[in-house]
Every structure is written in structure tokens, then in C-alpha cells.
Length: 488
Image 1 (cartoon, helix red, strand yellow):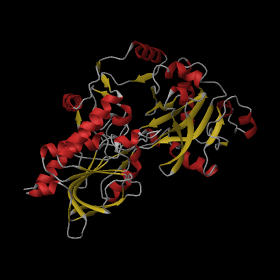
Image 2 (cartoon, helix red, strand yellow; image 1 turned 90 degrees about the horizontal axis):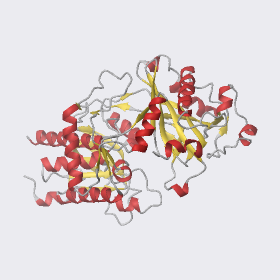
Image 3 (cartoon, rainbow, N blue to C red; image 1 turned 45 degrees about the vertical axis):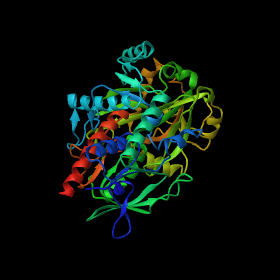
Image 4 (cartoon, one colour; image 1 turned 180 degrees about the vertical axis):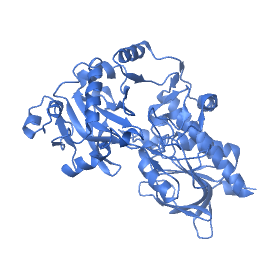
């Protein structure tokens, strides 16, 4: 029996470490819903949520709220709740490893998604149901189809207002605190070790909020859920691998990031600031737009052990710059990656070696003519690079021929939607890429390491708030079952 004093905080084990029953790393949708379900099934369990970011109020106080922290990116910053059919994990439209198959789909998934939606509604997220896109978006979808491009949307859905998101998150936090959960913000898990007693975590609290309670240097837990969100995927793969879980690297998406006058892309971004467009390709691949930033800028970011081109959006329309940036990425499947698309996985390393510490930028016309862009040609371009450190050079000889053929065809289709995007003055930055991994789990998100669970966008199981929440719900059930089994 767990006493009320146990619920007030963690106990210390024989070695002096804080000992709890479950640690959840990540206070986004997956982590919060996992804690909620665990404490519903096992009231009084000693649960700690650890997040490297800030509490909701501290995030909102910043001029540019960070992607991480309480509520994650989806629930604190996004807020679209897609309520249609889906699966976990998200299955790609290309070939996948044999072990990658849905653990929940169809009516079972929809039922769980409805449970999440009802909970958020009860907590105060009362946005109206939208069964179909508005006419402006429906028209954009039809125009994309006519151009031979798929326009990816999320309907039926509910779009939460800032007030809805605040009500849901503060209400969820209050429920968890009332049930004995503890939050630690501004702390990173730097080392995780699997022991006979469970999992020993070492915390770095250098970024803990001012005035926050002292953060323990170590935590000992019987069960561990890793739910860091998409931007923690790299950390997740390292920690999960260190703990003995099977982690399968999937083919990376690779390509370039465009920069074009904002007026050119306005016909798309005036309807939807981040239109997701894609088209199927031969030889087991598809090509897609990724992370459109209207009025944003290109920024070099260290990810996946390489320097890659990322886009930074303008938070408000009045802050927009004169250009828009969007990545055009090819995503091969496991079969295509060793066939026609072989070589794209080496592009980032090659470009980083050519221009250490800098991105490479090339005019589209120079790429078509298979010649490097010179500093003089770039200076004469009517489009001013928003990354002033980018090195003029060549991208055309780094990616496989299949990419450039698909790129030109796709760009030609986008020309019908955004006239002018095929201009030879359009700038291309490289490398641009995204990495993905598959974490084989059971039906409740337990990895091949007993007691270790993963959930949400970080392990590639979900895309969006509802899917991440369903993953958290299943993980919470798994944590409860694991703790019940250990107690017997």
C-alpha cells in the first residue's frame, strides 16, 4: 500500500538516489497523457515528469517561444486536433522494415482518439468541430490535384484557440499534481543506465528555471517512458540504444531548401502558412514540401551530426521578410534507398566537407546548367540570401540524378500553384534532410528492453497532438501493467 506521504515526493533508495516508480521524459502530449492514464489506473503511483524546457507560463513569456517545454510543440504552439482515421505508428507511403506495422488502427484508433478529444474538451478546450476544410482550402486542394500534387490536410478536426490550449494544459497539470505527480523543468537526462532495480538517470539542471525547487542529480525508477517529441529524436535514439532497445534507422529524406520572393509563394501561404504538398515517384519514393516559412529565413542548424539548412518562420505577419523558404525533400523507402535513390544519404557529409561550418547556396539556373554559383553571381541576384554565411557553390553534383529529375517535375507542378517558383533566380540551400527511426514496441509502447517505453513524435509513431496523445495513453496503460507486474 502506498501512503499519502509517499505521494508527496520521491523516496531515496539505498544508494541515496531519488527512487520513483515511473519517470516520464517529455511533458508534451504523449508524456502528459501517459502520466494521466498511469495515475488513473494506479492511483498513488510515484511519477515524475522531466522536461528540458520551461513550464507553460515561462514559455509564453518569451518573445519567441521555444519548441520544447510543457505542452510540447503540438499542444502548446500548434493545437490542431485531427479526429479522423489513422494508425500508430504512422505508416509511410513507401516500403518499410518488416517489423514496422500498425499496433493500433481503424475503429480501435478512432475510439482512443475520441477518448482524448473528450478529455481535452472536459478540461476546457471547446473549439468547434470542423468536419471539412473551409472553401479557400478546399479550392487549394482541388487546384493541387489538378496540378498532379497531393495536398495533405487534417480534417475532420478541431483547431484550438490560445485560450483552449491554456485551459487544457493548466487543467491537465492540475489533475496530475492533485494525483501526486511531480514536474521537473529545465533538466536534461544526460546519462541513462539499466540496472537490476530499473533505470538510473543522471540529470543536468543547468537550465532549470529561476526559483525552481532543487533538482536531484540522479533518479532511480522502475519504469521509464521516453517521449521527447520530434526535436528530441536524436537524443532518443542514443539513450534508447544505450539502454539496449532495438532502434532501426529508416532512409533519410534529403534535398534542398528553396528561397523565393514571398509574393511568389503567397498564393499558397495566404491560404495555409505551411502547405504540405507531395507527389508519388517511381522506384519507391515520394517528394514533398517540408517546413514552409512564409517571410522567414534560412538558418544553419546542427542536427544528426551534420550542419543542415533549416527554416525559421516569422511569428507575426508584420515581422515577415521579403522571401519565403521551403524544403523540397525526396523520401525513399527501404528498397528505393538502395536503388535509384542511393547517394542522397551522403549529401550532407559531402557538402559539410566542402564548406566546413557553412551551408552551400546555388542559383537554380546554375544548378540546371550544372555549374557552381560564384560570389559575383550571387551578389548580382535579385534575391538576397537570408543566410549571409552560406557559401556560394554547387549542389547539382551531390544529389542523385533521380532527385533532380523529380525536383524539376515537382517544381513544374508547383509553378501552376505559385507562378514564378521555377525562376532561375530561386536560391537553393543544402544540405537539407530529415532523419527517422523505428522503435519496435509491443501494443503498449514497450520496447525490446523490458520496462522501457517510447511514445509520440520523437520515435516516429505519431504526427500531431491526437496521435501523440493516443501513443501516450497506450504507454500509460503499459506503465501501469509493468508496475503491477513488478509488485506481484
